[in-house]
Length: 461
Image 1: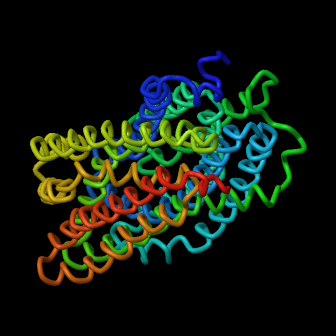
Image 2: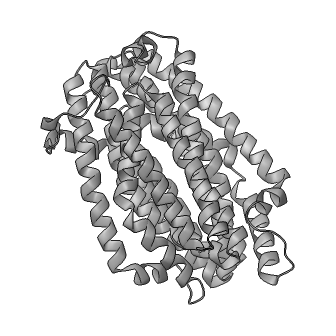
Image 3: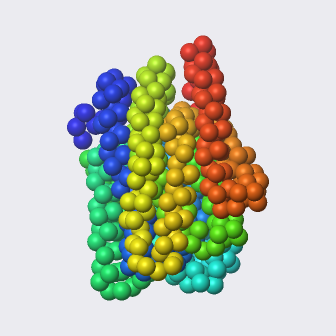
């Protein structure tokens, strides 16, 4: 590993260069990761049909719940590793690496077993109908078989990035996504496996990438590598990982609750195709927020290291630079979705003259335009929440995530649809985005004032 990629440079190099160096690979990796869902939806929509897209959308709550536990371990371990490296404690960082493997195996297996036992009950609870259940069940069963692989892949890829190998983390993610697209085409279009082909493509592509990650961490010249003594639970580290990771866990868990409520409300007021429309619109908006998450991932090692080293000005400068780039990105997404909604939706479903296809396109276009109404300010909101997480302030990060999902979106989902019907479901999301962003601005300004006026009170992790 070159000196340029050494974590020690995080405290001395130019912030803009550091952010570019760490964020660009993370952005490419995040966009590539989001393409899993987009590519799957495109192939399923074009190769299987509109109801299959709804079936795919119905699996998202279970995917979000699984991702919540993965995010808790992945984000918590990445933030704690950066802080420990900033404090010069490499041994603790390598112990964290071992515990990442153990935690992901335990959680991945537990979620797999729970999901397989209650798969039909869960899918009906998520809003499935008798027409969409077979698609959703077929896809989700295969994804659950590979759940532990998915957890390990994302967790170790996070560790690879914060250990000073952002380009390698990006490359491994890109390999996985490209292989997923090739296998999607082969299994769905070539072998006619239907929606099951999409699921197998995802599991197999992540398996290949996981092998590459294990090979890296087993090398003796890796900055962080596997040690036998690290493969037992260090409960102080587990507590630190889960405490810091509680914020993304709450975000994903709340997202799971919201998606369930959205799906069931859409089923009540609009039917199966309305759920499919939300699946399409949500995936498109998610692509732009994933770019922002790439910026925040690039920000994370820089902020965490400098916060751990008590270089607070560098941490804040990194945060504000990330805000600027993120807001520009979400504004671009807003413009694309508002100006070219038909072209965007057309990637997922073609106008073939059937009533289902036409209805799905019309519902998706209208929903997409409403969904992204506040997208420009969402960039700031995401960065603010992640900044608190990166400096080890999980309570504030949790407050921001819970407030948007549970305090704002959920009440709106009960209040607006009886008045506005399906549109009321869509309206709830941008309204919640606006209010939660205002709250994020207040909390961030208070934290900045504290860092500048009373710096000695910080870094107690």
